[in-house]
Amino acid sequence: MNENNEVETKDNSRNNILFAIILGLIALAVGIMPFFYLNNTTL
Amino acid sequence: MNAVIHEEHHHDGPPVGFKRWLYSTNHKDIGTMYLVFALVMLFIGGGMAMLIRAELYMPGLQIVNPDLYNNLVTDHALIMIFGMVMPAAAGMANWMIPMMIGAPDMALPRMNNMSFWLLPAAAILLISSLLVQFIPGTGTPVNTGWTIYPPLSLQVGLGMDLLIFSVHLLGISSIMASINIVTTILNMRAPGMPMMKMPLFVWSWFFTGLLLIIVMPVLAGGVTMLLFDRHFGTAFFDAAGGGDPVLFQHLFWFFGHPEVYVLLLPSIGVLGLVIPTFSRKPLFGYKSLVYFMGFLFALGLVVWAHHQYTIGMSLGVTTYFMIGTILISIPIGLMIFNFIFTMWRGSMTFETPMLFAIAIILMFSFAGVTGVMLAVVPADLQYHDTYFVVAHFHYALIPGAVFGLYAGVFYWLPKWTGHMYNEKLGKIFFWWTTLSFNLTFFPQHFSGLAGMPRRIVDYNIQYIEFNQISSIGSFAFGLSHLLFLYIIIKTIKGGEKAGDKPWEGSQIGTPGLEWSLPSPPPFHSYTTPPEVK
Image 1: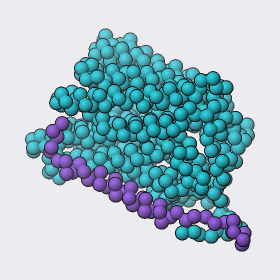
Image 2: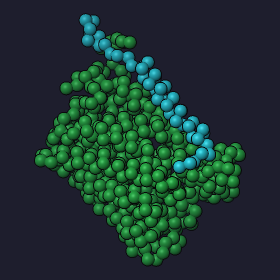
Image 3: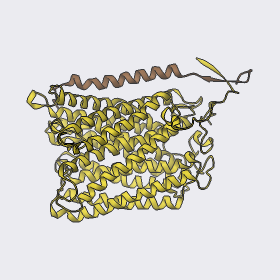
C-alpha cells in the first residue's frame, strides 16, 4: 500500500501471454513431429 | 510493470443468469462447470459400463450386438478418461490452484473459458460417434477400442470421423488448460511463495500440465494422420500403400502411457494434502515427493512400448522397455512409503477423505504389483489382451485416479459450498464403493489368468462364475454413485455451516492459503496478494 492508500499489484499479463506462446509453440512442435516420422518404424 | 489499483474500487459480484457461466472468466465458476461436466459424464460412461457388464452377465448374446458392444467399450474408456477424470481433475485445479498459491485468478482467464466450453462440443461429437451407427448407411460402428488401431480404424464408418474430431477438440481443450495451469503456477504465485513451498497438489498439476503439453499434440497428430489415411489418400498406416500400422501404435502409446500419469498425478497431489491433514503431521519428505513426481514424469515419457510387447520388437528394444517400466515402481513405491511415514505415529482420524486415501494406498499398490507382472515381457505375452489387463488398469485407475478425486471432493466440498457434508453418508459411500469395486474387478484377475480375452462380447462357459460376480459388483458400484450425487446435492443445498478451516490439521506443514479464505470463498478470492507464512 502506498501513501495514497492505493494497493500496488504486479501486472503479469505480458509474461503470461509470453509463457502461453512458448508453451503453445512447444505443443505445436511436438504435434507436427509425427508427420515427419512417416513410415520409419524401426523399433 | 506495476499497475496501481485503487483500494476503494471493488469488483462487482457475479453476473446473473446464463451469462455468468457462458462468458465466465472466474476460476471458481469455471472449476464448478468442469466438475459438473465430469459428474454428468461419470453417469454416461458409467451407464455404458453397466450395459457392458449386463451383457457379460451370461455367455452368448443378450442385450447388444458385437459391434455395438465394442463401440460401448470404446466410448466407455474415452468418456471416463477424457470426459470424467481429466475434467474433474482440471475442475479441482481451477478451483484450488489460484487459491493455494495466492493468485487472483488463472493466468489466462479467457483461454480458461474456451478450454472448458470446447468440452461439451467434444462430448456431443463423442456420443454422436456411438449413436450415428443407428442411421442407415453410416458404416460399421467404432468397434476398435479406445486405442483406435489401424487397419481396423481405417475401415469403420462415419463414427470414427466424429471420434477423431472429438479427440481434436479434447486435445485442444487439454493443451490450453495445461498451458494456463503451468503459466499460473510459474507466474502468479503470491510474494513469498517459492515453488518449493507450494502444496503438493499444485506440484502434481505442474507435472501433469507439462506432460499434457508434450503428449497430447502427438495424439492429435496421430489421429489427423488417421483422418488423412481415411479420406485424403495418404498411406501413413496402410500397409497396402507402403505405410505401417505399427507406427500408429507408437504414436498412440507415446500419448497413452503418459496419459496414465496425467490421470494419477492429480490424485497423488490430493493425497499429499489429505494424509497430512488427517494424520495431523507435516507431509513426510515433501521435497523427495516432488522429485519422485519429476522422476515419474520423465520415466513416464520413455516407456510407452510396454503396451506393445506382442508386435515383434527386437530383443534389445523390448528389454529396454521392460527395464524402464519396472523402474517406475521405484518412485511410485517411494511415494507410497512417504504417505505411510506421514501417517506413522500421527494423530489420525478417519473422515471420508482419509478413508479414501488409505484405500488408495492399499488398492493402488495392488495395481502396482500386477503392473510389475505385466512389465515382464515373457509373462506379458501370456497376459496380453486378457481380463488380467482389464483388472490391472481398473485397479490402477479407479483407486489411483477416481478415488483420489472422491477424496478431493469430500476434502474440499466444505470449502466450495460452505456446508459440511453428511459424514455418515460419506462413510457409507466409501464402504459401498470400495467393497463393490473389489467385487467387480478382483475376479477379473482370475478370469484373465484363465485366458478370458478382453473386448469380446461372448465368452466360454468356464468363465461364467467370475463374470457373474463381476457384474453384480459393478451394478452395486454403479448404484453407489446415486448416493454420491445425493450427498453432493444435499451439501450444496444446506447443512451444518463449515468454518474457514473445516479440518483441524489442514494447515500443518503447508502455507494453506486456501483455508484463510471464507467458506465458500468470495467471487474474487484475493483483491490484494495474501501473506504467505
